[in-house]
Image (tube, rainbow, N blue to C red; front, side, top):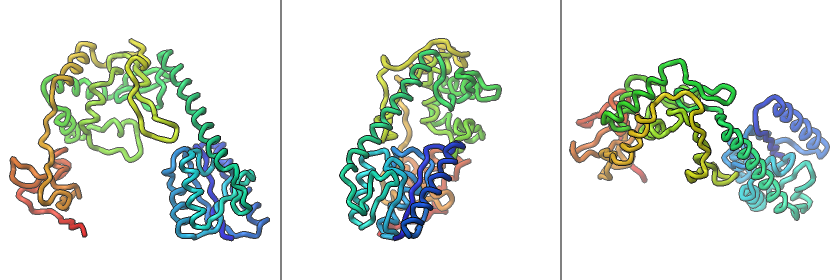
Length: 345
């Protein structure tokens, strides 16, 4: 029997690393006692409620190709804390003739021990939902005390012991500039383009996020212009996840948001902030949108790979990257010189 061994831990903390080693030792012993062979270990460091785990997906793909005979896991919750995902894996294995065995003896399709599968799948998802609810309540309690509840603070702020402090760099001046330029009549996309062309680090860069892009966008500018943290107020719980098994978020009604005034030093005055909110309501953003044309989704810029946008006012195509971000991102290529054609078959 060829065994695919799936191991998952939720974080990369030291105690979880020890758990990884312990789980591997359990599997080595179990497989040796059975006289089976190890096909491969699949290890993820991620929550079990989400299905888009790199090595879980790889294991599922190779199960479809029947590269092994058995999936081994410490318990069903290691594979999934999501009822829908649990049944997806179960159905896939049944269709491909791959067995599932958990070391806690709860599931063993090789011996027909599957009667409690549904109960365990439901139980582990409920356990995750209850944990999520407890965490949310803890964060709400902190927010009501005027403490910032997230690990990454808003742009231009640092967080220390749950309190927001203005950063000692140029980011506060960038925030003031964004508000001033918007009140002076600049559009959000125009502001974003100028910041990008001046090599101003983005909020993602400042917070050191993985794969942070260097381009400012309209949406980033809007988030800053509408963020009440800049007037010294702590406004939290503005959105929440739909469920523990989904990353999709929904907006929380204003009366249910947690608002604590004057919790930290302001960067923007209330008069300026209120004036910007008024302008956001009455101003209509107008951007010449890319129109469907003969070569839409076929014509691409050979320099940056972005789609070419048709502009009726130019009676031709322009690089979409150039149109949105300016000449630092790419050139307009007008008249067309450097393009590539992708013909779908």
